Image (cartoon, rainbow, N blue to C red):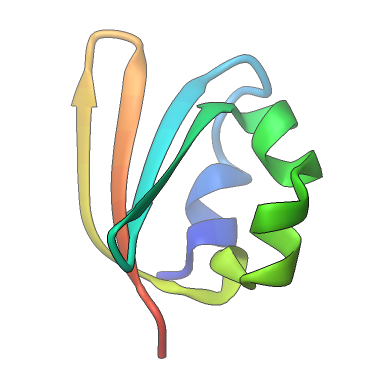
Length: 65
């Protein structure tokens, strides 16, 4: 499954942490979609390797294809 598919199923105020290539993007779903880093690095097209949650935060580990 791709990062876009996972994030699009979350509420817009859901807190998300995305780990990829030694980098981290964190924030609410609405804010993450709007960041330049998310668009330029095509993080939404990366494959999800792990998903975990902690009460109200979603942790996603992604790798590029």
